[in-house]
Length: 143
Image (cartoon, rainbow, N blue to C red; front, side, top):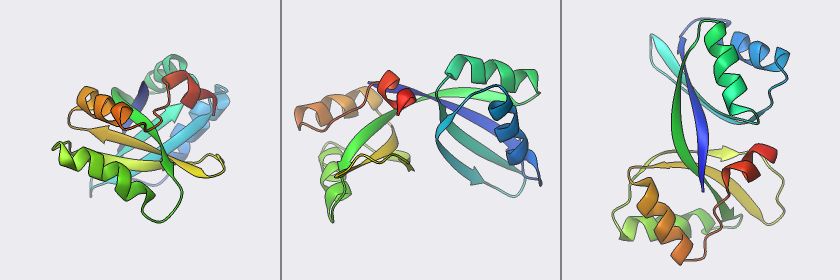
């Protein structure tokens, strides 16, 4: 139920993001989802890719600092209040959302959102009990 996410630390200067995407593209690695957060000096690029191990290796070979984080990909109703209904399940049990970002995928009536929770295992348990669809890692990498 957990998805492997790469965290790439980037200096906040022109061309660094382009360099990461070129390195991955040249290696035949497809980016499935991404989020970029920055400060004055550096940024954190969070990526879900179709070939996690190869991406980690090729980025390190090109001098990037890479970390691993586990996240959860949820199917959320694509309608007003859909996200709120999922977040209320978590809020009622004091599960904190550390960050989240959208996953670009045409799934019809639902959206796919990537979440990082302060208690990943408990969040998964609660969401499953409420019938929320949680994607397996392999499902996400193939979307």
